[in-house]
Amino acid sequence: MFDVNAIRQDFPILHQMVNGKPLAFLDSAASSQKPTLVIEAMDQYYRQYNANVHRGIYQISERASEAYETARKKIGRFINARSWREVIYTRNATESINLVAYTWGQANLKPGDVIITSEMEHHANLVPWQQLAARTGATVKYTPVDERGYLDMATFDRWLAPEVKLVAITQMSNVMGTVTPIGEIVQKAHAVGALVLVDGAQAVPHMPTDVQALDCDFLVFSGHKMLGPTGIGILWARKEILANMPPFMTGGDMISRVTFEGADWNQLPWKFEAGTPAIAEAIGLGYAVDYLNQLGMKNVRRHEIELTTYALARLNEVEGVRIYGPLEPTARGGAVAFTLGDIHPHDVASVLDGEGIAVRAGHHCAMPLHDKLGLSATTRASFYIYNIPEEVDRLAAGLDKVRELLG
Amino acid sequence: MDDFYKENILDHYRNPRHAGTLADATHSHESHNPLCGDVIRIDLHVNEDDIVDRVAFKGRGCAISQASASMLVETIEGMPLEEVKQLSKDDILEMLGIEIGPVRMKCALLSLKALKAGVYGLGDEEWELDEEDEDW
Image (cartoon, rainbow over all chains, first blue to last red; front, side, top):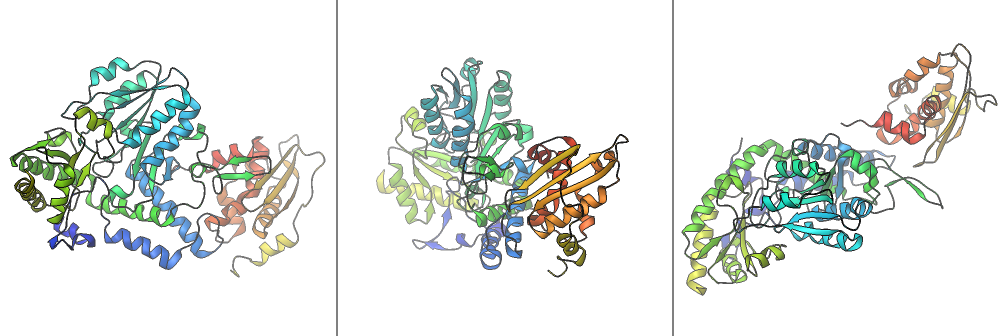
């Protein structure tokens, strides 16, 4: 059952005036809002059973441990992992990628090896690989992207060779919105023996995810973009790969035994979770997953395709708007980047803010992509489950106002 | 909590059965629970008929871990080795007869871990992966 008006009632933050206008929140690609369910679950933890996990021999600590691990299982089921042991808590997708770069990458890459990524990656899926390449002597290749946001698969195919050890690629661009052909990429990469890391920061919150069907090797995503709190993210990887990876951060909880001479590592997944984790946040993310499951991820995707279809049409009617990324709504997610004549996106966003409309302006952590497009910045509107066509109308009207003021 | 430290658990803790070691053990293994420092060593002597005819255990740790070891060695004395290999977590919990929460589970099962590692000739970690690697 997908009733957007009922959904909006679950998000208290949406019901407020900003600059004298009702808030139209069109920046969920940066961070989503949180339903009451998630806020209350975290509040309940702090009010009723706040205690450290895994060690305490008392009732509220056992309750905290159980809630923390139950959340992990919910998240694992949500992405159809084979085992909860494959679900590692991190701070966010960025930390998940760094974990893989510093552990698997450092242990497996050597001079001459190649990492393939793309021109439309978020900096989080780009800088860690550049740094890994600098440390190991490997090189990074960027699959070209056209103005419509499509990958140049012919070039990708040509680059595939035994030296390619990793393909690290987004499943949904945070700028172009493009949904990439992960299935095809995985199949081709595996054929030359390369592993595939999927940046699911944008895709996992917005469409059904099945790691077994994708057949990828690593999947990373952030809790705060999928109705959960900040400070909690996920690294999923195949158990066989995780078992052979050295730990990332070391310290408490990730060990099984410590002596003055050294240490043995804990079992999966705790081997990768040093120190007291983000307990309330993990629990909150578990409830966010419950909320999304209740709606059904297919329904989430359908709602966003409908809204994006409407937004692409309305934005196209505004004089001077140029949209980047696929024009076919089913080939993309609900993040729509555009320019309005030569008006700077910061000015666009400021005027819209005056209308109570929250959009993003800048390079969206994808400077190389903007360089390639010959732009310093774009404006981005992005949609989620609680957005409605009226907000798209207000965006279009707001852009007309921007043109009147600055055009 | 009164239930937790039932009389028979306290009895095994205070008067451990078969305490000590076997000089001629055919199987012997010491397991640790690093999180709380419990240690249990279990020695077995298996005769030509593959029967566990003599047993001993030695350890230190909490009442639950030591009582569970004492009950376990008492149970397996005279048992065919094949049956010993079949013993499971549920058998131990039944023996103890109390509710064991997730945190104390490792204490309760330490003796089984030492026993299994001994009879299979595996290290602690290998056995742990084998027995506890439930996917869901």
